[in-house]
Each structure stands twice: as C-alpha cells, then as structure tokens.
Amino acid sequence: MKVVLIGVGQAGGKITQALAEFDYERGFEAVKGAFAVNTARTDLQSLDIDTMLIGQDRVKGHGVGGDNELGAEIMQDEATEVMDELDGRVTSKADAIFVVAGLGGGTGSGGAPMLTRKLQRIYEIPVYGIGVLPGRDEGGIYQANAGRSLKTFSRESDSVLLIDNDAWKSSGESLEEGFDQINERIAERIGLLLAAGEVIDGVGESVVDSSEIINTLKGGGVASLGYASAKADEDPEENINVITSATRKALLTGTSLPQAVEADKALLIVAGHPDRIARKGVERARKWLEEETGSLEVRGGDFPLNSGRIATLVLLGGVERSQRITEFMDRAREAEEQRQQSGEDAATAFENDDLDDLF
Image 1: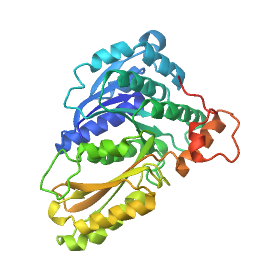
Image 2: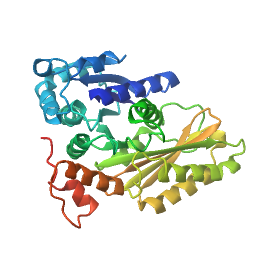
Image 3: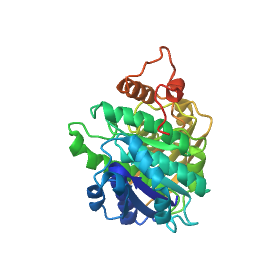
Image 4: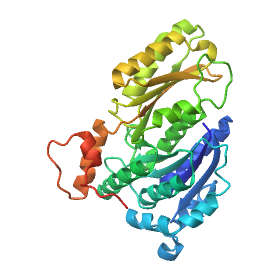
C-alpha cells in the first residue's frame, strides 16, 4: 500500500520518521513521502524528514503547551501554507494519506483532526489517522485532550488506527524509556501492514493488496492492529498450528488496542516464505477470526517474505464498542469533570456530547 505520511506534533513527527526509516531500510517502498508539522521548533530539529514550523506569530516556536484548541486554531489559520508544502508530495502513486499524531498533547491532538478535514476536501484518496492514546499514568489533561481529539479525529478521517501507549510498552519500562520502544513497535507493525502487497519475494497463493486494507477500513470509526510472530518450520504442514497460534496471540494479546476483539471487519495477513505458508493454517485462522470477532467480513491473504519466521497481522475495523474505548472515554469525561450517564453502552459513550468536539 503506497502512502504519504504526515506527522503532526512531537509524537506524530517521531512516529512518522520511524515508519519512513523502517520502510526505507527494508526496501519496501510503501512510503512515498514523509513530512512533519509542529508548533515547537526543538521537536522538529531532531527529525531527518522534511519539516514545517507553524504558529510562529502566536507561540514563537515554543509549542502550544498542551492546549489542543490552540493547536486546532493554528492549523486552521495556516492550513493554506501547509497544503502548499504538501503540494507535489501527494502524487497519483499514493493509495492513501496517513495523518499521524499523539492524541494527548496539544499540537497533534488539535492539529491532526483539523488537517485531516482540510485534506478530505482536496484529495479523493482515503485520509486515515494514526492516533496514539496516552497511557493511564500520563495525567488528566492528556486523557481529556485525547478524548476530545479522538471524537473529532474519527469523525473527520476515513478511519483512525488507534494505538494504546500501554499496549506496546514493555513491563518494567518507565514512560520516558518506553516511548522509543513503542515507536519502534509501531513502525514494525504498521510498516509491515503498509508494505503488504508492495514487495513480493515469492509467489503466494492469495497475496494481499492495498484494496484489502482499504476495504477493511471502509466504514470509518476506529481500527486496531494485532501482531505476533513465531519460528517457521521448513515443512508447511508443520506450520498449520504455527499460523493459528500466532493469529490467536495477535488478536488476544498483541493488539494496539487491548480487549478490542469485537469488530465490523477484519483482515488477516500471514507474512513469511511462500513455501512455508500452509493454506490450511491460513483458512483455519481466518475462520477462527470470524467466530472471535463476530464479523461476517473477514479477509485473508499472504505477504510473501524471505524470512525464517511467520508473522501474522490482524487488522480490525470498527472497534468503537471495545471495552478499552469505553474505559478510556470514561476517564476522559471524568478528567473534563463532566457528568457520566449511567447505563450507557460503548457506542453511545463514544458518540455522546459529554465531551465536546474540538471544532
């Protein structure tokens, strides 16, 4: 899947660079452009990708201090200049645009949804979001910011691939120590997803292409991504259980959004040497996904790679009703000191007016 990445804010810029580096180092050529926008000059100086500083007249290059309403206002005011910088970067080769942001801060939290709105008016290809939820220990302002941002971001984008900071942080790591590791895990997992169908080291029986990813994300809302890998046997028949076990692990313990199992749509990608991918294993894993997610629309396919391991990627579309979203939105509303509605189901909690949209 050929994409253009636009990172907004500190986390968005770092993740965008990590994704671009992962893609370049492995020669996948899925990332056709990478660009970062921020209100803080120092955050941009550490990046190797193309960058743009916005909001100089209002914040003098010092950032918005966690004020995501100000972040949205600055992006709105300077949208024309940002679009001018993007002109020529988004070409006919791109299948989609991904706007990347941490949802707990100020510039990314406010600027990413606003930029997505502007992009939707100009480009006909899908505009997706990659949003990072703050961890449980990151403080109330981050929870409140992320709650408002998520509501707006998911409304403005074709789908938001959501990543929980707590999901891919190793146990024992402090938050600061874990950020770089989290970014690397994001780059590996999303990088493989984007590369699916772009690089073929062998001929698979049912190779995934970009249309499968687009169809899985079609319908909007929130998406999540699961990942697991295991050593492959040279005999493909011995890998039937390897594939099914890795798929279970990817969904039940390896998703970017813990406890997000029920989904509207799903895509299973099995990556590995084509001679070692057992069709029976892929089909069994796909049927298990249908039962576990409750979805009648589960796609499956191969991603041929010259590797001694087998990896499974599980992309879920439409996971707004997950337990994690419910818990997060509750925390976000509490942080905003808003009244919680008793007996509210997850879908209503995600759509209600307790948390105002950013704009």
